[in-house]
Image 1: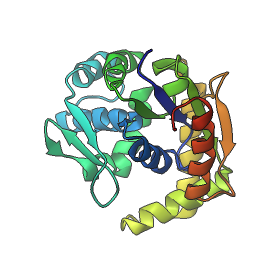
Image 2: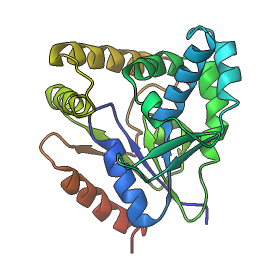
Image 3: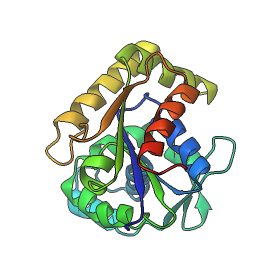
Length: 226
């Protein structure tokens, strides 16, 4: 039997990261924050002065990532690059914006695809992102696609940034999220879309605990949780 994978996809602000971490801890499984990989590539590229539209140069950066995710720390996750904690840098808005541009490059996606598959190790993997169920792990037995209203997503992201001391207007943030959604859903390579066999969960009116409970129940049906 292949190593089990639970994929959780969706746009920003739907709570997929928080939910995925909780489930990974409950299951005792490995965790993949695929979006962070693109942010790491964007950060590294900007630091090296690499043009974010130069696919070939970005692929070189992407192929040299020694990345691991530890579910510890104040935010529930520590991102290590070659053993160094780069969590704060990777979560910056500059890297987040750059990640969407970088992710549209087919050369980068190809370079990272193999690396992402390598996270699939026993006893299992919880993988969250935007194309986990459609491209990276299409054979996953349980695929979740989270959604929420644009207003709720913007409010959640605004609150999250304010808690980190990163002031940004709600209207500007909402506009940025809309633009990113448009880029991600319309790109030719691995667009943001629910897999045909994904189960969609609208989180607009649900708490984190309620979303986890819904997915936990679904996981029990495929023997992921006993």
